[in-house]
Length: 336
Ligand code: ZN
Ligand code: ZN
Image 1 (cartoon, rainbow, N blue to C red):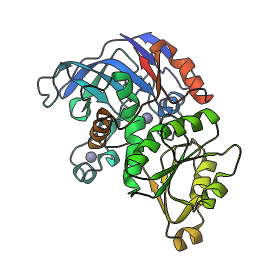
Image 2: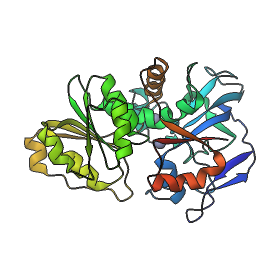
Image 3: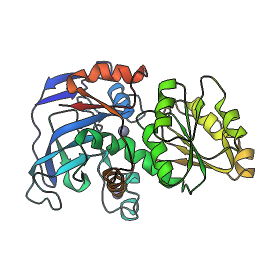
Image 4: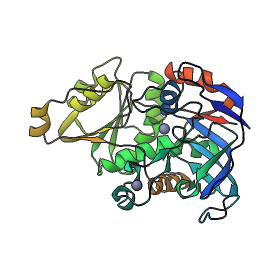
């Protein structure tokens, strides 16, 4: 089968012919129909983070496809089902996090496209217990971005416990941000979109943002404080400076939700202001299988719009370069 393979962190990702994987106990073989490109795939291919994957490997954790084979012991998933292969490819199922609904914190988790070969390929095998069924009526190219960008931002809104009429500032309107602002609206928030490009701010307006702030033209901290400050700021831009801006944009009692993962990530936290202002800083990582089921349910009900551009998998290397250059409207989805 054809797959996009990372042979080394100093080499460009390339299309190769590799052995089609076969199923072991508990696994399904999925014929991939669509697979979204996440910034994490680029960090994986470059070996940017403290824990790196082991080359050769196949990235891709927004895989959507049809189950073609299932091991004899598989329950709950059938041949012919359309499923999503998310970042959480496997968890232990019995630690306190797995049991109490925080499976994305499991210490024994394995991650699709990182420690398990991912979906930038014609086929992928997956743990049947960790795939999520895609409801009828959602096209594969729309389901793919929901599988990471969607569930990650949905979870960010959930962990912040946003309530109606609170102001949510979304820093970074791209693959994640265009969905984050829609989830914030769904729970009744007033949404301010912050970005540095006019096209992305225009997209935010079209998707229902109440205000937009061009951070290239004005100081987003001053602009947000002028309208009372943000109750919640969600950071989706992979730059420590943006985390600091987002924190300073909070009103008293505000919550900073950190989602983006800058390569060299640290920002100063003023303790006096944090304590006296009763502010919170929250880290939020992807979402659970149940979160993804809810994301799909909202989309099937017509409550969200996915902005994506479909490209052939052969374009994987140039697409990664385009994302890094900021030349991509929202999300790229590959078709094998
Ligand atoms: Zn991702
Ligand atoms: Zn566990």
